[in-house]
Length: 131
Image (cartoon, rainbow, N blue to C red):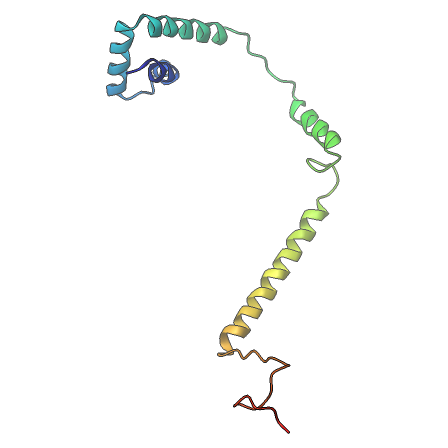
């Protein structure tokens, strides 16, 4: 196992998420490699320091204030406090378009052969111009 692979496994190893075979390979590498062993010790120390930080409970209206700030900064495109009539209009138009295309498909599919007529072509089947 190389240094990059070993160090990429530190998080999963710490969280006990590695398969037994990878745990054995990583532990064997750490036993032989001073560089990765020191990196592992540093990783564990950093995780322990971070996990000891004070956990902060957000204010009860935190989520609402964030939504309001997003609404103000996006000029109402997200989380607007007005009714969502624009979304309803788009949905109605979409349903109508789907129905129109479905109807057209059914008309074409049930009519059998579709003839395309070129208005500039002559009506004579042999291609000769009529007098």
